[in-house]
Length: 388
Ligand code: ARG
Image: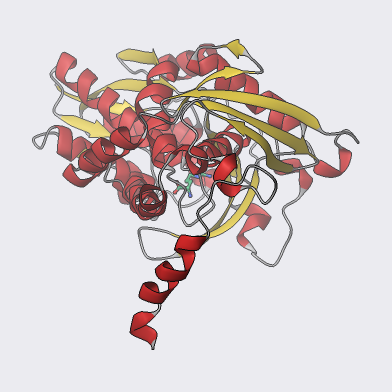
């Protein structure tokens, strides 16, 4: 029997995928990556087993996700269309790597996933899988089968003797990992409406947050966050802690009408407390230590990097080349940023670095000024010459 590795979430959709793939005479092995989405893995395993899959893989990739995917994107300043820190998008190429690795280990011919036919994730997964091994074939049951509604799926699952403990269905589609939570569907599909409070899980309603600000400081070493309030943490612990801390201050809510890769606009709500704080802090530190040309050019790179990640091109030559550029710019991005979190806002209120290019003796308007004002006259004469 030919084998297929299915990216499995444990829910109804992917459980129906198991049944459907088995009907195509395939031996189904499930693969699940733990990126910090707080799933119930015991429950997931039970569901998978009850669907009759032959093997269940669950991998803890939280640390790898942060150090090899999230932090490179953070150093690049990658935020899609100025707002989305790319939590879901950054997870897909890693999941693709996991799928391919297991496919090789199991000598499987196929990879399958439960993405719908109109999202970005199908593209990201399949492009990455193809880039890693062009001989693997992908199957996307949701693009092929006739099941249209959830009721039809449940009926199909029952007819196939699949006993998935179906949780009470929320109207929302949610994806979550350590870098953030993405929420869509239901009332959110009407962009004129404010999102209801019930959709939020990582962030407290700013109106209900403490009446006094919370001050924190973050230490970076070469563009990577290493300390929170003076204490060293592992990547996973630092991001998890920051999600709690900033989330409790209502920081990290994002409401975005975005341009999908597949041509449509969609409205998505994100919660990304740690990502919002870390991007802001990292950017403020760069303002202090990078020279003017690099600071300004890097914004262009950030925009492109975000587009590449969003568009499923993590495993591409341009993305790898941009990584090298970014790495080079981060040599001196070390130092400390102080932030003030208050009722949903996050602002930088202090910065410090041994590589700071800010020179008080040149900037000051007070005593001790060393700026050569006499040189200004000649400079302006030449600079303005073309406009005369
Ligand atoms: N729009 C986001 C992206 O393309 C998130 C997609 C997944 N969202 C979800 N609610 N399941 O990366």
